[in-house]
Image 1 (cartoon, rainbow, N blue to C red):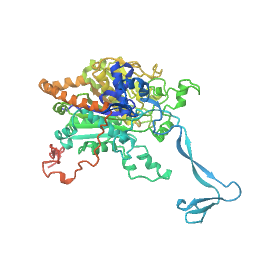
Image 2: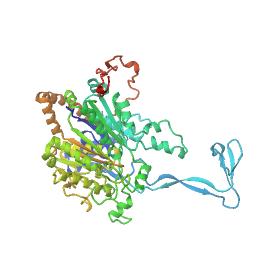
Image 3: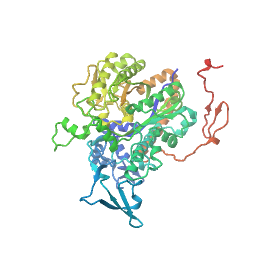
Image 4: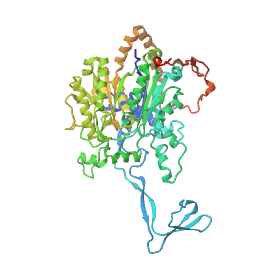
Length: 638
Protein backbone atom coordinates (compact mmCIF):
# COMPACT_ATOMS: atom_id res chain seq x y z
CA UNK A 1 0.00 0.00 0.00
CA UNK A 2 1.67 3.21 -1.19
CA UNK A 3 1.65 6.26 1.00
CA UNK A 4 0.13 9.40 -0.49
CA UNK A 5 2.46 12.44 -0.89
CA UNK A 6 0.38 15.35 0.40
CA UNK A 7 1.29 19.01 -0.13
CA UNK A 8 1.11 20.49 3.40
CA UNK A 9 3.15 23.67 2.91
CA UNK A 10 4.38 25.87 0.10
CA UNK A 11 6.21 29.12 -0.38
CA UNK A 12 8.42 31.07 -2.66
CA UNK A 13 8.98 34.24 -4.60
CA UNK A 14 8.51 35.09 -8.27
CA UNK A 15 7.52 38.15 -10.32
CA UNK A 16 3.98 37.95 -8.89
CA UNK A 17 5.18 38.18 -5.28
CA UNK A 18 5.19 35.87 -2.27
CA UNK A 19 3.76 32.41 -2.94
CA UNK A 20 2.45 31.39 0.49
CA UNK A 21 -1.19 32.04 1.30
CA UNK A 22 -1.70 32.32 -2.49
CA UNK A 23 -0.56 35.94 -2.74
CA UNK A 24 1.42 35.42 -5.94
CA UNK A 25 -1.50 33.59 -7.52
CA UNK A 26 -3.89 36.42 -6.65
CA UNK A 27 -1.64 38.87 -8.49
CA UNK A 28 -2.12 36.75 -11.63
CA UNK A 29 -5.91 37.03 -11.47
CA UNK A 30 -6.02 40.47 -9.84
CA UNK A 31 -8.57 41.87 -12.29
CA UNK A 32 -11.06 39.08 -11.50
CA UNK A 33 -10.75 39.31 -7.71
CA UNK A 34 -13.31 40.89 -5.41
CA UNK A 35 -12.26 44.21 -3.91
CA UNK A 36 -11.31 42.68 -0.54
CA UNK A 37 -8.91 40.24 -2.18
CA UNK A 38 -7.45 42.98 -4.35
CA UNK A 39 -6.71 44.97 -1.20
CA UNK A 40 -5.01 41.94 0.35
CA UNK A 41 -2.90 41.49 -2.79
CA UNK A 42 -1.73 45.11 -2.75
CA UNK A 43 -0.98 44.89 0.98
CA UNK A 44 1.11 41.77 0.42
CA UNK A 45 3.20 43.44 -2.30
CA UNK A 46 3.67 46.55 -0.14
CA UNK A 47 4.81 44.50 2.87
CA UNK A 48 7.10 42.32 0.77
CA UNK A 49 8.86 45.28 -0.83
CA UNK A 50 9.19 47.39 2.31
CA UNK A 51 6.62 49.98 1.28
CA UNK A 52 4.44 49.40 4.34
CA UNK A 53 5.39 48.13 7.78
CA UNK A 54 3.51 48.03 11.05
CA UNK A 55 5.41 49.44 14.03
CA UNK A 56 4.55 50.22 17.66
CA UNK A 57 3.53 53.72 16.61
CA UNK A 58 1.40 52.60 13.66
CA UNK A 59 1.78 51.89 9.96
CA UNK A 60 4.83 53.42 8.29
CA UNK A 61 5.67 53.90 4.64
CA UNK A 62 9.14 53.37 3.14
CA UNK A 63 10.18 56.85 4.36
CA UNK A 64 9.19 56.15 7.96
CA UNK A 65 6.11 58.38 7.79
CA UNK A 66 2.97 57.30 9.66
CA UNK A 67 0.25 56.57 7.09
CA UNK A 68 -3.15 55.01 6.74
CA UNK A 69 -2.60 51.67 4.95
CA UNK A 70 -5.91 51.99 3.10
CA UNK A 71 -5.05 55.46 1.81
CA UNK A 72 -1.50 54.44 0.92
CA UNK A 73 -2.59 51.37 -1.05
CA UNK A 74 -5.30 53.29 -2.89
CA UNK A 75 -2.85 56.02 -3.84
CA UNK A 76 -0.06 53.63 -4.91
CA UNK A 77 -2.03 50.73 -6.39
CA UNK A 78 -0.85 51.32 -9.96
CA UNK A 79 2.76 51.61 -8.85
CA UNK A 80 2.60 48.43 -6.76
CA UNK A 81 0.98 46.44 -9.56
CA UNK A 82 3.27 47.92 -12.18
CA UNK A 83 6.33 46.78 -10.24
CA UNK A 84 5.38 43.11 -10.59
CA UNK A 85 5.13 40.47 -13.35
CA UNK A 86 6.87 40.86 -16.72
CA UNK A 87 8.07 44.40 -17.29
CA UNK A 88 10.96 46.53 -18.49
CA UNK A 89 14.32 45.16 -17.40
CA UNK A 90 16.01 47.06 -14.58
CA UNK A 91 15.57 46.98 -10.79
CA UNK A 92 19.28 47.26 -9.97
CA UNK A 93 20.13 43.85 -11.43
CA UNK A 94 22.20 45.50 -14.14
CA UNK A 95 21.81 48.43 -16.52
CA UNK A 96 20.57 46.99 -19.85
CA UNK A 97 21.56 50.23 -21.58
CA UNK A 98 25.18 50.00 -20.38
CA UNK A 99 26.52 46.44 -20.28
CA UNK A 100 30.27 46.27 -19.85
CA UNK A 101 32.39 44.26 -22.25
CA UNK A 102 35.82 44.50 -23.89
CA UNK A 103 36.88 45.02 -27.49
CA UNK A 104 40.15 43.61 -28.76
CA UNK A 105 42.34 46.06 -30.66
CA UNK A 106 45.88 46.44 -32.01
CA UNK A 107 47.62 49.71 -31.13
CA UNK A 108 50.48 51.08 -33.24
CA UNK A 109 52.58 54.25 -33.15
CA UNK A 110 51.20 57.33 -34.85
CA UNK A 111 54.41 57.81 -36.86
CA UNK A 112 57.52 55.84 -37.76
CA UNK A 113 58.80 55.85 -34.18
CA UNK A 114 58.34 52.90 -31.87
CA UNK A 115 55.31 52.67 -29.59
CA UNK A 116 56.25 53.40 -25.97
CA UNK A 117 54.51 54.05 -22.67
CA UNK A 118 55.11 54.22 -18.90
CA UNK A 119 53.62 51.60 -16.62
CA UNK A 120 53.85 50.62 -12.98
CA UNK A 121 56.46 47.90 -12.80
CA UNK A 122 54.21 45.66 -10.72
CA UNK A 123 51.64 45.73 -13.56
CA UNK A 124 53.98 44.46 -16.27
CA UNK A 125 52.91 41.40 -18.21
CA UNK A 126 54.42 38.14 -17.04
CA UNK A 127 56.12 36.71 -18.95
CA UNK A 128 57.06 39.73 -21.04
CA UNK A 129 56.14 39.56 -24.74
CA UNK A 130 59.15 39.02 -26.97
CA UNK A 131 58.72 42.38 -28.74
CA UNK A 132 58.80 44.41 -25.50
CA UNK A 133 61.87 46.31 -24.36
CA UNK A 134 61.56 47.32 -20.69
CA UNK A 135 63.72 49.88 -18.88
CA UNK A 136 63.27 50.49 -15.15
CA UNK A 137 62.89 54.27 -14.60
CA UNK A 138 62.53 54.45 -10.82
CA UNK A 139 61.29 52.39 -7.91
CA UNK A 140 57.71 52.26 -9.23
CA UNK A 141 57.67 52.81 -12.99
CA UNK A 142 59.17 51.28 -16.11
CA UNK A 143 59.35 52.50 -19.70
CA UNK A 144 58.14 50.01 -22.30
CA UNK A 145 59.10 50.23 -25.97
CA UNK A 146 57.35 47.90 -28.43
CA UNK A 147 58.49 46.79 -31.84
CA UNK A 148 55.28 46.42 -33.84
CA UNK A 149 51.70 46.46 -32.60
CA UNK A 150 50.35 46.16 -29.06
CA UNK A 151 47.37 43.82 -28.64
CA UNK A 152 44.99 45.27 -26.02
CA UNK A 153 41.45 44.89 -24.66
CA UNK A 154 39.54 48.18 -24.52
CA UNK A 155 36.58 48.76 -22.16
CA UNK A 156 33.28 49.24 -23.96
CA UNK A 157 29.55 49.22 -23.30
CA UNK A 158 26.64 47.82 -25.27
CA UNK A 159 22.87 47.95 -25.09
CA UNK A 160 20.84 44.82 -24.48
CA UNK A 161 18.72 43.62 -27.38
CA UNK A 162 16.23 42.28 -24.84
CA UNK A 163 14.62 44.68 -22.38
CA UNK A 164 11.78 42.64 -20.89
CA UNK A 165 12.00 40.15 -18.04
CA UNK A 166 9.99 38.52 -15.29
CA UNK A 167 11.61 40.28 -12.33
CA UNK A 168 10.86 39.96 -8.64
CA UNK A 169 8.72 42.80 -7.28
CA UNK A 170 10.64 46.08 -7.26
CA UNK A 171 12.10 46.82 -3.85
CA UNK A 172 12.28 43.20 -2.70
CA UNK A 173 15.85 42.75 -1.50
CA UNK A 174 16.34 39.15 -0.28
CA UNK A 175 19.98 39.65 0.68
CA UNK A 176 19.01 42.33 3.20
CA UNK A 177 16.68 39.99 5.10
CA UNK A 178 19.45 37.90 6.66
CA UNK A 179 23.24 37.74 6.96
CA UNK A 180 23.69 36.83 3.30
CA UNK A 181 27.50 37.22 3.34
CA UNK A 182 27.85 37.72 -0.43
CA UNK A 183 25.61 34.78 -1.27
CA UNK A 184 24.63 34.48 -4.95
CA UNK A 185 21.13 35.76 -5.64
CA UNK A 186 19.81 32.26 -6.34
CA UNK A 187 20.78 31.15 -2.83
CA UNK A 188 19.26 34.26 -1.28
CA UNK A 189 16.01 33.33 -3.03
CA UNK A 190 16.35 29.74 -1.79
CA UNK A 191 16.54 30.91 1.82
CA UNK A 192 13.47 33.12 1.37
CA UNK A 193 11.41 30.49 -0.47
CA UNK A 194 12.17 27.71 2.02
CA UNK A 195 11.45 30.04 4.95
CA UNK A 196 8.15 31.02 3.36
CA UNK A 197 7.20 27.36 2.89
CA UNK A 198 8.14 26.39 6.46
CA UNK A 199 6.21 29.35 7.90
CA UNK A 200 3.15 28.27 5.90
CA UNK A 201 3.13 24.87 7.64
CA UNK A 202 1.77 26.22 10.90
CA UNK A 203 3.88 23.50 12.58
CA UNK A 204 7.18 24.21 14.29
CA UNK A 205 9.92 22.37 12.43
CA UNK A 206 11.31 20.92 15.66
CA UNK A 207 7.95 19.19 16.15
CA UNK A 208 8.34 17.55 12.75
CA UNK A 209 11.93 16.50 13.53
CA UNK A 210 10.88 14.82 16.77
CA UNK A 211 8.15 12.78 15.07
CA UNK A 212 10.24 11.55 12.13
CA UNK A 213 13.54 9.66 12.07
CA UNK A 214 16.41 11.84 10.79
CA UNK A 215 16.92 9.60 7.76
CA UNK A 216 13.25 9.88 6.78
CA UNK A 217 13.44 13.54 5.77
CA UNK A 218 14.52 14.30 2.21
CA UNK A 219 15.41 17.54 0.46
CA UNK A 220 15.51 17.76 -3.32
CA UNK A 221 16.26 21.29 -4.45
CA UNK A 222 18.50 22.93 -7.02
CA UNK A 223 18.81 25.13 -10.08
CA UNK A 224 19.24 24.46 -13.77
CA UNK A 225 22.02 26.90 -14.56
CA UNK A 226 23.70 27.04 -11.17
CA UNK A 227 24.43 30.40 -9.57
CA UNK A 228 25.38 32.67 -12.47
CA UNK A 229 25.84 36.11 -10.89
CA UNK A 230 29.19 37.52 -9.77
CA UNK A 231 29.04 35.86 -6.32
CA UNK A 232 28.81 32.43 -7.95
CA UNK A 233 29.94 30.87 -11.21
CA UNK A 234 29.65 34.15 -13.07
CA UNK A 235 32.33 35.78 -10.92
CA UNK A 236 34.46 32.64 -10.98
CA UNK A 237 34.75 32.97 -14.76
CA UNK A 238 34.92 36.76 -14.92
CA UNK A 239 37.19 37.79 -12.06
CA UNK A 240 40.63 37.32 -13.61
CA UNK A 241 39.53 38.80 -16.93
CA UNK A 242 38.30 41.87 -15.05
CA UNK A 243 41.59 42.23 -13.18
CA UNK A 244 40.07 40.98 -9.91
CA UNK A 245 40.70 37.98 -7.68
CA UNK A 246 38.61 34.83 -7.53
CA UNK A 247 37.01 34.49 -4.09
CA UNK A 248 36.95 31.32 -2.03
CA UNK A 249 33.14 31.21 -2.25
CA UNK A 250 32.44 31.60 -5.95
CA UNK A 251 33.10 28.02 -7.02
CA UNK A 252 31.63 26.45 -3.88
CA UNK A 253 28.41 28.47 -3.96
CA UNK A 254 28.00 28.11 -7.72
CA UNK A 255 26.98 24.44 -7.66
CA UNK A 256 23.50 23.61 -8.99
CA UNK A 257 22.56 21.60 -5.87
CA UNK A 258 23.53 24.40 -3.48
CA UNK A 259 19.87 25.39 -2.79
CA UNK A 260 19.38 21.96 -1.20
CA UNK A 261 22.64 22.30 0.73
CA UNK A 262 21.57 25.68 2.11
CA UNK A 263 18.13 24.39 3.13
CA UNK A 264 19.72 21.42 4.92
CA UNK A 265 22.50 23.34 6.66
CA UNK A 266 20.87 26.66 7.55
CA UNK A 267 17.12 26.04 7.84
CA UNK A 268 16.33 22.40 8.64
CA UNK A 269 19.44 20.84 10.14
CA UNK A 270 18.57 17.90 7.89
CA UNK A 271 20.43 14.57 8.14
CA UNK A 272 18.37 12.70 5.54
CA UNK A 273 18.57 12.23 1.79
CA UNK A 274 19.49 15.27 -0.26
CA UNK A 275 20.37 16.36 -3.78
CA UNK A 276 18.85 17.60 -7.00
CA UNK A 277 18.17 16.50 -10.53
CA UNK A 278 19.29 18.97 -13.18
CA UNK A 279 16.93 18.83 -16.16
CA UNK A 280 16.86 22.34 -17.61
CA UNK A 281 13.29 23.68 -17.52
CA UNK A 282 11.89 20.42 -16.12
CA UNK A 283 14.09 20.44 -13.00
CA UNK A 284 11.29 21.13 -10.49
CA UNK A 285 9.25 18.13 -11.67
CA UNK A 286 12.32 15.88 -11.71
CA UNK A 287 12.88 16.79 -8.05
CA UNK A 288 9.21 16.31 -7.30
CA UNK A 289 9.35 12.81 -8.76
CA UNK A 290 12.16 11.90 -6.38
CA UNK A 291 10.10 13.18 -3.46
CA UNK A 292 7.00 11.29 -4.57
CA UNK A 293 8.90 8.01 -4.90
CA UNK A 294 10.47 8.47 -1.45
CA UNK A 295 7.10 8.92 0.22
CA UNK A 296 5.25 6.26 -1.79
CA UNK A 297 7.89 3.68 -0.85
CA UNK A 298 8.11 4.74 2.79
CA UNK A 299 11.78 5.70 2.45
CA UNK A 300 10.86 9.22 3.63
CA UNK A 301 7.91 10.63 5.51
CA UNK A 302 8.77 14.28 4.90
CA UNK A 303 10.16 15.73 1.67
CA UNK A 304 11.06 19.31 0.83
CA UNK A 305 11.05 19.90 -2.92
CA UNK A 306 12.20 23.09 -4.59
CA UNK A 307 14.14 25.00 -7.19
CA UNK A 308 15.73 28.42 -7.34
CA UNK A 309 16.75 30.16 -10.54
CA UNK A 310 18.27 33.64 -10.79
CA UNK A 311 19.28 33.87 -14.47
CA UNK A 312 18.84 37.61 -15.05
CA UNK A 313 22.47 38.33 -15.89
CA UNK A 314 23.81 39.89 -19.11
CA UNK A 315 25.60 36.68 -20.09
CA UNK A 316 22.49 34.49 -19.79
CA UNK A 317 20.43 37.01 -21.73
CA UNK A 318 23.04 37.09 -24.47
CA UNK A 319 23.27 33.31 -24.60
CA UNK A 320 19.55 32.78 -25.08
CA UNK A 321 19.24 35.77 -27.42
CA UNK A 322 22.04 34.44 -29.62
CA UNK A 323 20.12 31.16 -29.87
CA UNK A 324 17.14 33.16 -31.10
CA UNK A 325 15.07 31.93 -28.15
CA UNK A 326 14.19 35.25 -26.46
CA UNK A 327 11.59 37.85 -27.42
CA UNK A 328 13.97 40.70 -28.25
CA UNK A 329 12.77 44.26 -28.72
CA UNK A 330 13.10 44.42 -32.49
CA UNK A 331 11.25 41.15 -33.01
CA UNK A 332 8.40 42.40 -30.81
CA UNK A 333 8.37 45.66 -32.76
CA UNK A 334 8.04 43.80 -36.05
CA UNK A 335 5.41 41.46 -34.62
CA UNK A 336 3.23 44.38 -33.54
CA UNK A 337 4.02 46.39 -36.71
CA UNK A 338 5.38 49.34 -34.72
CA UNK A 339 7.60 52.07 -36.11
CA UNK A 340 10.81 53.08 -34.31
CA UNK A 341 9.05 55.90 -32.42
CA UNK A 342 6.28 53.73 -31.00
CA UNK A 343 6.70 52.14 -27.59
CA UNK A 344 6.80 48.36 -27.27
CA UNK A 345 4.39 46.81 -24.75
CA UNK A 346 7.01 44.88 -22.81
CA UNK A 347 4.42 43.54 -20.36
CA UNK A 348 3.01 41.50 -23.26
CA UNK A 349 6.38 40.14 -24.34
CA UNK A 350 5.41 36.52 -23.59
CA UNK A 351 2.48 35.26 -25.69
CA UNK A 352 2.02 31.50 -25.34
CA UNK A 353 0.20 29.85 -28.24
CA UNK A 354 -0.43 33.18 -29.98
CA UNK A 355 1.64 34.88 -32.65
CA UNK A 356 4.93 35.20 -30.79
CA UNK A 357 8.67 35.56 -31.24
CA UNK A 358 10.32 34.00 -28.18
CA UNK A 359 10.21 33.46 -24.46
CA UNK A 360 10.80 35.97 -21.65
CA UNK A 361 13.47 35.17 -19.09
CA UNK A 362 12.43 35.27 -15.40
CA UNK A 363 13.66 34.59 -11.88
CA UNK A 364 11.86 32.51 -9.26
CA UNK A 365 12.32 30.22 -6.27
CA UNK A 366 9.58 27.81 -5.24
CA UNK A 367 9.41 25.21 -2.44
CA UNK A 368 6.73 22.73 -1.40
CA UNK A 369 6.62 20.46 1.66
CA UNK A 370 5.24 16.93 1.35
CA UNK A 371 4.10 14.67 4.21
CA UNK A 372 2.87 11.12 3.89
CA UNK A 373 -0.84 10.69 4.64
CA UNK A 374 -0.33 9.20 8.14
CA UNK A 375 1.93 12.03 9.28
CA UNK A 376 -0.48 14.58 7.80
CA UNK A 377 -3.29 13.30 10.01
CA UNK A 378 -1.04 12.78 13.01
CA UNK A 379 0.17 16.41 13.01
CA UNK A 380 -3.03 17.98 11.68
CA UNK A 381 -1.24 19.53 8.71
CA UNK A 382 -3.31 21.49 6.19
CA UNK A 383 -4.02 19.69 2.91
CA UNK A 384 -3.34 21.91 -0.11
CA UNK A 385 -3.35 19.05 -2.62
CA UNK A 386 -1.39 15.91 -3.38
CA UNK A 387 1.36 14.96 -5.81
CA UNK A 388 -0.11 11.88 -7.45
CA UNK A 389 2.79 11.08 -9.79
CA UNK A 390 5.36 12.51 -12.19
CA UNK A 391 6.34 10.87 -15.46
CA UNK A 392 9.62 11.56 -17.23
CA UNK A 393 10.56 10.65 -20.78
CA UNK A 394 13.46 11.58 -23.02
CA UNK A 395 12.99 12.41 -26.70
CA UNK A 396 14.98 9.60 -28.24
CA UNK A 397 17.14 10.30 -31.27
CA UNK A 398 17.13 13.98 -32.15
CA UNK A 399 17.97 16.14 -35.17
CA UNK A 400 19.45 18.75 -32.83
CA UNK A 401 19.65 19.05 -29.07
CA UNK A 402 17.01 21.82 -29.15
CA UNK A 403 14.59 20.08 -31.52
CA UNK A 404 11.35 18.45 -30.31
CA UNK A 405 10.83 14.71 -29.99
CA UNK A 406 8.47 12.00 -28.82
CA UNK A 407 9.04 12.10 -25.06
CA UNK A 408 6.36 14.62 -24.11
CA UNK A 409 3.66 12.55 -25.83
CA UNK A 410 4.56 9.68 -23.50
CA UNK A 411 4.85 11.72 -20.29
CA UNK A 412 1.53 13.52 -20.90
CA UNK A 413 -0.31 10.30 -21.76
CA UNK A 414 0.95 8.58 -18.62
CA UNK A 415 0.11 11.60 -16.44
CA UNK A 416 -3.41 11.64 -17.86
CA UNK A 417 -3.75 7.89 -17.23
CA UNK A 418 -2.54 8.27 -13.63
CA UNK A 419 -5.02 11.10 -13.10
CA UNK A 420 -7.83 9.01 -14.55
CA UNK A 421 -6.94 6.22 -12.12
CA UNK A 422 -7.92 8.55 -9.24
CA UNK A 423 -10.79 10.67 -10.55
CA UNK A 424 -12.17 8.32 -13.24
CA UNK A 425 -12.73 8.83 -16.97
CA UNK A 426 -15.52 11.37 -16.51
CA UNK A 427 -13.46 13.32 -14.00
CA UNK A 428 -10.54 13.48 -16.42
CA UNK A 429 -12.82 14.58 -19.27
CA UNK A 430 -14.80 17.23 -17.42
CA UNK A 431 -13.02 18.09 -14.16
CA UNK A 432 -9.35 18.40 -15.04
CA UNK A 433 -7.21 20.96 -16.83
CA UNK A 434 -3.62 21.47 -17.96
CA UNK A 435 -1.04 23.96 -16.78
CA UNK A 436 0.96 24.01 -20.01
CA UNK A 437 4.67 24.69 -20.34
CA UNK A 438 3.65 27.51 -22.71
CA UNK A 439 6.95 29.31 -23.23
CA UNK A 440 5.88 31.81 -25.88
CA UNK A 441 8.13 30.54 -28.69
CA UNK A 442 6.92 29.65 -32.19
CA UNK A 443 8.33 26.13 -31.82
CA UNK A 444 6.63 25.51 -28.47
CA UNK A 445 3.22 26.69 -29.64
CA UNK A 446 3.33 24.11 -32.43
CA UNK A 447 4.90 21.16 -30.64
CA UNK A 448 3.21 21.40 -27.24
CA UNK A 449 -0.22 22.09 -28.69
CA UNK A 450 0.09 18.89 -30.75
CA UNK A 451 1.08 16.93 -27.66
CA UNK A 452 -1.81 18.29 -25.57
CA UNK A 453 -4.35 17.84 -28.38
CA UNK A 454 -3.17 14.28 -29.04
CA UNK A 455 -3.44 13.43 -25.33
CA UNK A 456 -6.93 14.90 -25.10
CA UNK A 457 -8.20 12.89 -28.09
CA UNK A 458 -6.51 9.74 -26.79
CA UNK A 459 -8.64 9.93 -23.62
CA UNK A 460 -11.86 11.05 -25.29
CA UNK A 461 -11.59 14.64 -24.10
CA UNK A 462 -13.23 17.17 -26.41
CA UNK A 463 -12.62 20.53 -24.72
CA UNK A 464 -9.65 20.29 -22.32
CA UNK A 465 -8.94 23.67 -20.63
CA UNK A 466 -5.34 24.89 -21.12
CA UNK A 467 -3.66 27.74 -19.24
CA UNK A 468 -0.14 29.20 -19.43
CA UNK A 469 1.08 31.30 -16.50
CA UNK A 470 4.36 32.23 -18.22
CA UNK A 471 2.28 34.88 -19.97
CA UNK A 472 2.38 36.74 -16.62
CA UNK A 473 5.60 35.50 -15.04
CA UNK A 474 7.99 34.70 -17.85
CA UNK A 475 10.13 31.58 -17.99
CA UNK A 476 12.04 30.89 -14.79
CA UNK A 477 13.72 27.80 -16.29
CA UNK A 478 14.25 25.26 -13.46
CA UNK A 479 11.52 26.89 -11.33
CA UNK A 480 8.89 27.15 -14.05
CA UNK A 481 6.90 24.06 -13.02
CA UNK A 482 7.04 25.34 -9.44
CA UNK A 483 5.38 28.54 -10.67
CA UNK A 484 2.72 26.41 -12.37
CA UNK A 485 2.05 24.40 -9.21
CA UNK A 486 1.72 27.56 -7.11
CA UNK A 487 -0.88 28.87 -9.57
CA UNK A 488 -2.72 25.56 -9.35
CA UNK A 489 -2.85 25.62 -5.55
CA UNK A 490 -4.17 29.17 -5.75
CA UNK A 491 -6.91 28.17 -8.18
CA UNK A 492 -8.09 25.48 -5.77
CA UNK A 493 -8.34 28.15 -3.06
CA UNK A 494 -9.92 31.01 -5.02
CA UNK A 495 -11.62 29.22 -7.92
CA UNK A 496 -10.43 31.59 -10.66
CA UNK A 497 -8.67 29.91 -13.58
CA UNK A 498 -5.96 32.27 -14.93
CA UNK A 499 -6.41 33.16 -18.58
CA UNK A 500 -3.68 33.82 -21.14
CA UNK A 501 -4.31 37.56 -21.20
CA UNK A 502 -1.38 38.52 -23.43
CA UNK A 503 -2.90 36.70 -26.40
CA UNK A 504 -5.88 38.00 -28.35
CA UNK A 505 -6.23 34.96 -30.56
CA UNK A 506 -4.54 31.60 -30.99
CA UNK A 507 -1.94 31.37 -33.78
CA UNK A 508 -2.93 29.62 -37.02
CA UNK A 509 -0.30 26.88 -36.65
CA UNK A 510 -1.51 25.81 -33.21
CA UNK A 511 -3.33 22.46 -33.02
CA UNK A 512 -6.52 22.80 -30.98
CA UNK A 513 -9.22 20.37 -32.09
CA UNK A 514 -9.72 18.83 -28.62
CA UNK A 515 -8.22 21.47 -26.33
CA UNK A 516 -9.40 24.92 -25.28
CA UNK A 517 -6.88 27.68 -24.59
CA UNK A 518 -8.40 29.99 -22.00
CA UNK A 519 -7.70 33.59 -23.00
CA UNK A 520 -9.72 35.16 -20.17
CA UNK A 521 -9.94 34.52 -16.43
CA UNK A 522 -12.74 32.11 -15.54
CA UNK A 523 -14.42 32.09 -12.14
CA UNK A 524 -15.31 28.40 -11.87
CA UNK A 525 -15.31 27.86 -8.10
CA UNK A 526 -12.62 26.19 -6.04
CA UNK A 527 -14.05 22.67 -6.43
CA UNK A 528 -14.70 22.83 -10.16
CA UNK A 529 -11.58 20.85 -11.00
CA UNK A 530 -10.43 17.61 -9.37
CA UNK A 531 -6.92 17.50 -10.81
CA UNK A 532 -4.33 19.40 -12.80
CA UNK A 533 -1.65 18.12 -15.12
CA UNK A 534 1.52 20.20 -14.98
CA UNK A 535 3.53 19.94 -18.18
CA UNK A 536 7.21 20.76 -18.51
CA UNK A 537 9.53 20.51 -21.51
CA UNK A 538 13.23 20.92 -20.78
CA UNK A 539 16.00 21.82 -23.21
CA UNK A 540 17.79 18.74 -24.51
CA UNK A 541 14.74 16.47 -24.39
CA UNK A 542 13.83 16.46 -20.67
CA UNK A 543 10.05 15.97 -20.62
CA UNK A 544 8.07 15.73 -17.39
CA UNK A 545 4.33 15.75 -16.70
CA UNK A 546 2.82 15.71 -13.21
CA UNK A 547 -0.58 14.70 -11.92
CA UNK A 548 -1.61 16.97 -9.03
CA UNK A 549 -4.81 16.28 -7.07
CA UNK A 550 -7.16 18.89 -5.62
CA UNK A 551 -7.55 19.14 -1.83
CA UNK A 552 -11.17 18.02 -1.83
CA UNK A 553 -10.18 14.85 -3.70
CA UNK A 554 -7.31 14.24 -1.27
CA UNK A 555 -9.59 14.67 1.74
CA UNK A 556 -11.93 12.05 0.31
CA UNK A 557 -9.04 9.66 -0.21
CA UNK A 558 -7.86 10.17 3.36
CA UNK A 559 -11.33 9.48 4.71
CA UNK A 560 -11.59 6.26 2.73
CA UNK A 561 -8.22 4.97 3.93
CA UNK A 562 -8.23 6.15 7.55
CA UNK A 563 -11.94 6.36 8.46
CA UNK A 564 -14.25 9.05 9.80
CA UNK A 565 -12.98 8.84 13.37
CA UNK A 566 -9.43 9.66 12.29
CA UNK A 567 -10.71 12.49 10.11
CA UNK A 568 -12.69 14.01 12.99
CA UNK A 569 -9.60 14.01 15.19
CA UNK A 570 -7.59 15.45 12.31
CA UNK A 571 -10.03 18.30 11.81
CA UNK A 572 -9.68 19.39 15.42
CA UNK A 573 -5.88 19.33 15.18
CA UNK A 574 -5.94 21.22 11.90
CA UNK A 575 -7.87 24.11 13.47
CA UNK A 576 -4.85 24.76 15.72
CA UNK A 577 -2.42 24.40 12.81
CA UNK A 578 -4.35 26.86 10.68
CA UNK A 579 -4.43 29.34 13.56
CA UNK A 580 -0.66 29.06 13.90
CA UNK A 581 -0.15 29.51 10.16
CA UNK A 582 -2.45 32.53 10.22
CA UNK A 583 -0.32 34.12 12.94
CA UNK A 584 2.77 33.72 10.74
CA UNK A 585 0.82 35.22 7.86
CA UNK A 586 -0.17 38.21 9.98
CA UNK A 587 3.48 38.86 10.78
CA UNK A 588 4.38 38.73 7.09
CA UNK A 589 1.57 41.11 6.16
CA UNK A 590 2.80 43.50 8.86
CA UNK A 591 6.21 43.58 7.19
CA UNK A 592 7.94 41.51 9.88
CA UNK A 593 10.98 39.63 8.58
CA UNK A 594 10.47 35.88 9.09
CA UNK A 595 13.54 34.56 7.30
CA UNK A 596 14.91 31.37 8.87
CA UNK A 597 18.70 31.27 8.75
CA UNK A 598 20.61 29.34 11.40
CA UNK A 599 24.30 29.77 10.67
CA UNK A 600 26.65 27.77 12.94
CA UNK A 601 23.67 26.50 14.91
CA UNK A 602 23.72 23.23 16.90
CA UNK A 603 26.50 21.75 14.77
CA UNK A 604 26.72 17.98 15.35
CA UNK A 605 29.70 15.64 15.22
CA UNK A 606 30.40 11.95 15.86
CA UNK A 607 30.15 12.32 19.63
CA UNK A 608 26.50 13.38 19.20
CA UNK A 609 25.61 9.94 17.87
CA UNK A 610 24.84 7.02 20.20
CA UNK A 611 26.32 3.55 19.69
CA UNK A 612 24.03 0.70 18.69
CA UNK A 613 23.76 -2.33 16.41
CA UNK A 614 20.07 -2.00 15.64
CA UNK A 615 19.60 1.78 15.74
CA UNK A 616 21.41 5.08 16.10
CA UNK A 617 20.15 7.99 18.15
CA UNK A 618 21.10 11.60 17.43
CA UNK A 619 21.37 13.97 20.39
CA UNK A 620 18.29 16.15 20.62
CA UNK A 621 16.10 14.00 18.34
CA UNK A 622 13.70 11.53 19.91
CA UNK A 623 13.18 9.19 16.95
CA UNK A 624 16.20 6.96 16.20
CA UNK A 625 17.63 5.87 12.87
CA UNK A 626 16.95 2.18 12.28
CA UNK A 627 19.82 0.00 11.09
CA UNK A 628 17.47 -2.82 10.12
CA UNK A 629 18.24 -2.31 6.45
CA UNK A 630 16.42 -4.80 4.23
CA UNK A 631 18.48 -7.01 1.94
CA UNK A 632 16.85 -6.92 -1.51
CA UNK A 633 19.23 -9.66 -2.68
CA UNK A 634 18.54 -12.18 0.09
CA UNK A 635 17.73 -14.88 -2.46
CA UNK A 636 21.23 -14.47 -3.90
CA UNK A 637 23.10 -14.61 -0.60
CA UNK A 638 24.07 -17.48 1.72
